[in-house]
Length: 399
Image 1 (cartoon, rainbow, N blue to C red):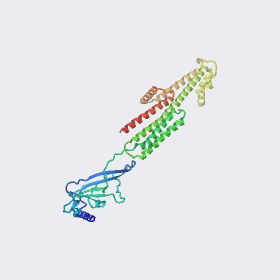
Image 2 (image 1 turned 30 degrees about the vertical axis):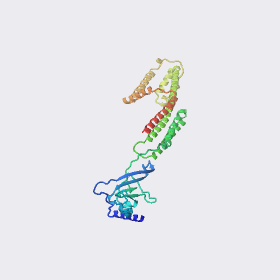
Image 3 (image 1 turned 180 degrees about the horizontal axis):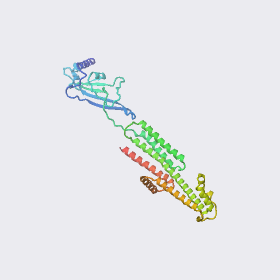
Image 4 (image 1 turned 45 degrees about the horizontal axis):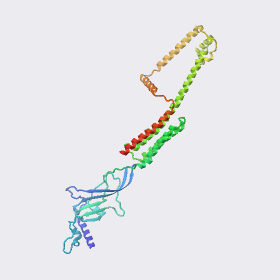
């Protein structure tokens, strides 16, 4: 009985393939052919952010109706399905009868040319045979499981697990930023310690950013992790600049105080010298001769070489030649000063800029204690970084 059924199936398949043209679709020249499809994703095997591709394992089912492959159940079962009265036991017309065939049968019939639009490489599993199956219904309906395919247009929305990046990138960046704040508690005179700490944190943030960029795809838009790393770098670099401001304020103020003390000491010394020193007529004439001498070494000689402590001398007793020379020399010097001031004239715009800068500088409160900068930084930097993190995570997590 089983041998008879197998023989009938073989004859039926051979009969329906006689004159079958694989190059023509069903209903050729008539109505469009409706091809159904369902796709089941078995697993995501690999996802590469750098190459921007992924590998999936899936089941592809396609079904359509080809009337040229229709067969009758009477031809399959023959007299074996008749009872003793000669009546047929099958109640339907054979449309629900299905023959299950191997995948090789698909190479003898027409199949849809379905394709993947972004397919790089695809293959059929072939353990132990090629995973392809054809089911042929009695009314000509066909179902091709995992058919011949090359291109199929699909869209997947993937959600990355954030836990990996939190421990790999975000947490180290937060710790590096917090490490840069340690310099605010170090003495401002410890230049080497604070500069080394600032440069180390800046270089560490640069290394983290480079590593993250190398593991992510090169795209034209800004990623969320890029924004976070840039802001962390800004906070670290700002901590280094904060010490530069502290150092400049501290040492600049000391230099100004020292210069001011030196000037005051010079004024006191010159003031005492003017009050206590007097000159005789002979000494003044000798000094006048030295100033008018063509020898530079004599002209530049200090007044102390000729000044002696004697009784004060009335200027009316000076020789007329000395009085004329002294007045001439003073006028010459004043003339030189006038020419120099005229030659060093600045444009009006530059003068206005300097004037505005001086006004701004005067309006800025002077910091007498540089420790005030560190005290404010100990509060401003953590609060600003906490506010940035709150806004960042609220925006991207809720999105």
